[in-house]
Amino acid sequence: MSNILELLRGIEVEWKPLVDIILPTSNIKWRDAERTYRYIDLTSVSIETKSITETSEITPSNAPSRAQKIVQKDDVIFATTRPAQQRYCLIDDEYSEEVASTGYCVLRAKKELVLPKWILYCIASTEFKTYVEDNQSGSAYPAISDAKVKDFKIPIPPLEIQAEIVRILDNFTELTAELTAELTARKKQYNYYRDHLLSFEDGEVEWKPLGDIALIGTGSHDTQDAIEDGDYIFYARGRDPLRLNVFDFDETAIITAGDGAGVGKVFHYAQGKYALHQRAYRIVPKDVMEPRFVYHYISSYFYTYIQKASVSSSVTSLRRPMFLNFQIPVPPLAEQARIVAILDKFDALTNSLTEGLPREIALRQQQYEYYRELLLRFPKTEVEA
Image 1: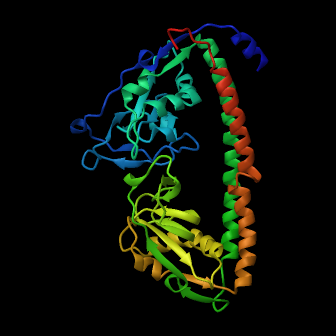
Image 2: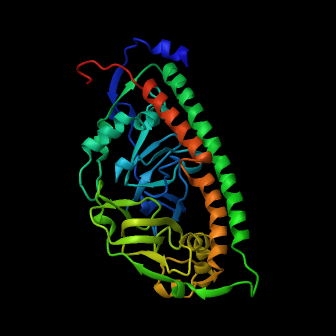
Image 3: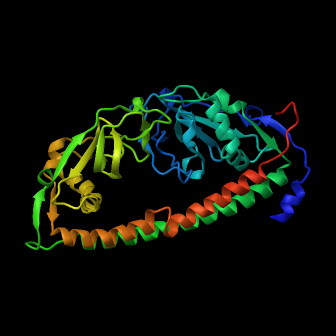
């Protein structure tokens, strides 16, 4: 590390807008398309891992209107809708020549000038995040134009220096990826113990419909109601919560999506004041139940239940009767508390930012971000500034 810092000391580089160092890209012509494509929409890229986690298959007959941009290996894509979330990634072989949403700005490097990963790390920088926040428009549904993204200036050191800095930063991100893989293995172990502890023999405990032991309802808000810096957490239908300046409920509740990609999955355990989407459900356990016990049980079995209960091949939305009829075991409160204590400990080791692997991952991420900012810090002339 000291060698590269010594090499960078006093170096002068030119700063160029992204538009000067990228190639033009093209949109798909659906009338000429003949095959099935993988569609990278705005939820396909993980905010946490900066990678594509899931896609859908589309054809000319069912392609959504936003499915337009053809991507290639080594393209950098950046989500221009809610850009402050920093949803971006590098396209690898698996997704080359597939189709991305118009909600992404596609940055295709002129490789004789700049490395694709150099662009990737530059748009990961704090400076770019600040630039995005200053240039986005719209309070409820903020966005930044492709043109504004491409106006952002980045330093262009010689390719060999770019390569060395990329190598160093890759080492940090690879270590984080290894820890994340280990965390995934731990989560599988946690799931095994959770299923074991929540399995009961016939006649061992009383079973009741969820509607008998919990209050079930929805919220009243739509996603477009969200405010970037609202006072209260706003649970919508996805994994990432939003914000609002008003709250609907002040309670402890389990939250699951009523439709969308997360239908039937438990993403949130609400405590205190919160707002709720009109197609998200709140499950509020009554006094006969330990709320965390209900949370663990629903997390384990509810999604499988709705898949089996559905008359179609896939579940696209939930209705209240599906919740009311879901059977849940009701062991004595003391036994519920014992099970919760064990599962919460596993949960902390696999999910808590103050314990276990998540804490180690967070520390490594902080280290990466420190060196990223340090290594990308080049002096600007007055004109460039």
